[in-house]
Length: 442
Ligand code: SAH
Ligand code: SF4
Ligand code: F3S
Image (cartoon, rainbow, N blue to C red; front, side):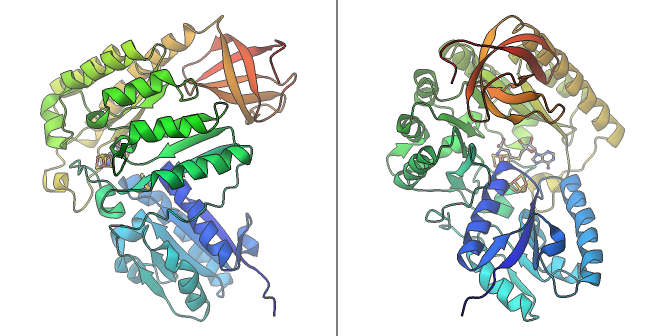
């Protein structure tokens, strides 16, 4: 007898790897007779894929759990499950403190989800939070909702153990998928009409499958379809090999954009963070990258107010940001995380100092971004149209190869097409322009 499909509502927090995991979860559930719904009101199962990287990421999830708890009071038959990094970090504690939560499932246990949900429907609460040294979902084709831009996880976990970071504890040991399966997935994406693939991992450049390193994987992925853009993130400065830099330079369809988090400009702090490079080593790396890949765009992550950070350390960070001239920066106030090494250091930078330093970093970066973007006025750039601009029905938005957001009047073209856009004004976050109607435009 055909069973009607049960409906799952799934919300995702955190990084791109979590977004990619959610597509794996949906794929696993789809095979077991569950399909996705966008409306919570029609859902039999509510899942939230969570992030634990900073205190405020968890607070956001707790706020949302409050909504689900009220919802469950009115709809007691609904199953509520917490997935991802918070599930892994808090484990049993979550089941104990949140009595309406039926399921707690960590990132390496998603294969158990269908059975756990079935049991929860029968009234049995469940938990699965073992980390694995081998699970990489290599055989699972993610159920993607976007048809244009794909996230593709090439590895899981992290072995770097930066002292501030919870990821090695929530995601476990580093492990890479097989090169053949990744390349096969890129081929499928190309055949299904995708235009851009982002290879994902906490440190994509420490990817390894036998003899094959990330540079080889990247070149192999790029060779699949030269009209398919290949992006990748995140790159760790320590593993940025010369071969990798050359590969990016030599392949037109590998995007000229590297997310290369530095975290701090002070050697003393970098050492305390266990980042394994000095500020000068990072500077030389950037110099080499810029010399080898003309026009490369760089972005970074910065933490303000790591334990013992002085005004002098902070000044060094600002200096480094000015020197590198990043195209963008993701900036965070230090947030102590249980189990990490830094947890044992005193969180001694006062909140208002952290905030001031953060704002100074943001201000410096904003003026650099504005300056760099202004230098693009009058230049024609190729943009992959992603869709209608959020702010205006009559405009498209899309990205350049260097990952800059461009907004321009529709006037021909469609989502998924490449357009030539002449930039006429900018702000620090977005470029605005007009389409050129060259004959080559499709
Ligand atoms: N694997 C990537 C990033 C992982 S998390 C890398 O190595 O760079 C994304 C960013 O969150 C980090 O780069 C860091 O800047 C920030 N972050 C991680 N833990 C943090 C913490 N405890 N407090 C504040 N920011 C943190
Ligand atoms: Fe965290 Fe460091 Fe690993 Fe990045 S490299 S995920 S910051 S431990
Ligand atoms: Fe957050 Fe986990 Fe990603 S902690 S940043 S969702 S790996």
